Amino acid sequence: MSELSVNHLLGIKYLTPEDIDLIFKTADHFKEVINRPIKKVPSLRDITIANLFFENSTRTRLSFELAEKRLSADVINFSAGSSSVSKGETLIDTVNNILAMKVDMVVMRHPNPGAGIFLSKNVNASIINAGDGTHEHPTQALLDSYSIREKLGEVKGKKVVIVGDILHSRVALSNIFALKLQGAEVKVCGPKTLIPKYIQSLGVGVETNLIKALEWCDVANMLRVQNERMEISYFPSTREYTQQFGLNKEILNSLDKEIVVMHPGPINRGVEITSDVADSKQAIILDQVQNGVAIRMAVIYLLASKIKP
Amino acid sequence: MLLNAKEINIILHRLACQLIEDHPGFENTVIIGIQPRGVFLADRIIKLLQEEFKIKNIPYGHLDITFYRDDFRRSDKPLEANKTKIDFIVEDKQVIFIDDVLYTGRSIRAALTAIQSFGRPKEIELLTLIDRRFSRHLPIQPDYNGRQVDAINDEQVKVHWKEIQGEDAVYLLPKENSAAVSGKQKKE
Image 1 (spheres, each protein chain N blue to C red):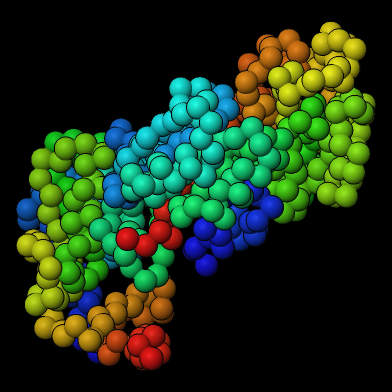
Image 2 (cartoon, each protein chain N blue to C red; image 1 turned 180 degrees about the horizontal axis):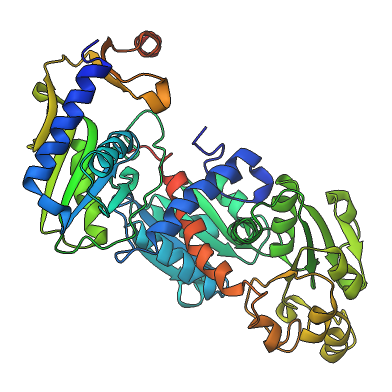
């Protein structure tokens, strides 16, 4: 051990518990590195990474770029809006053109589920999935589990509830895979219209009452309502959603234990979570962001170590 | 066996005395053990300085060089990182690196780069228990040295510590047979 079982990070689905353990241990070292006066190591000075973002992102793109730069990799950025994709170029052609410029690794976000898997079968580079439609967002799930591990000591045996738009959320799916793989108990909570019909087959419980779900859990991961992915109405109004599934200080204080509150961002303050909760001591939202850089450094480092010069 | 427990004990005392000679009081000096194996030697030297020579408050850290090595992606086995623990700045300090065996010098080259992340030291010195003097790839020499050894490349110098292997000893061994066998299989 001390090598990943995969050559690409396409989804948590393809990882083993040992892979996750190795990524976390490596991230521990990088977390120490990014808290030094000089936050940079020269490991990847001969690796070039292309960040291909066919869909909008702030946090993930900055986090990946920072992780790459802290490892001394050369970085090129690409976003679909300003590219030849609008002229009709196919995905494989776009990527192969970029790879022809001697790029070793591709970090890709794409609106279509399975885009990363498709790419990994058709081009010769190490692929990291930075979110593919409503499918998976593996680095987010890794940093979420890593943050739980940091806060509560371990993930195994912890009760985690994922609240909100489960149907459209790649964060939810990757989190379910990651948490189950590490032996946590998982429930999802949200309006019935936003919970996939066969979600129980993944071994998770369903709870439609937020208070009950919160009373059960150690950790609540509050997801954003993804209005941009909703072509029809899944609930009557945002106000009604907030009344039933929004987390506020009153609810938090009424619980008989201190739960950990997480949010993958971007936050819609006042919708799924109120400001006083987001800024409270129980929220580890900014720790998640900091851990994101360390986790992505670990993933990139471990995958890069498998690329032979 | 190259050195037994008694010989190692004498050498450690000598090295500690040499350090005191050059760094009286250790006012501006910090000691850095190179991970993973240099830390055991550094622990011993620190213990000697504190318990036998009553020198207190020596800043002491562990430095891991994994991410600074020049054989990333080039070595057969994956590199495994260890903990770096330096909770002080080395700016303008006299730094003493401690490692058990000085072989090609590449680890120390990596350590020289790594330490820059913690400031610009005034001076860096190197203390090693074993110096394999004819095996160097880089112009790096120890300032304080336990024993010089003329070992050929097919041989391995192995340092045992009481805390880990149950005895203090240094062995000169032929390179492990398993490695030779697997190498042969690869060729076929």
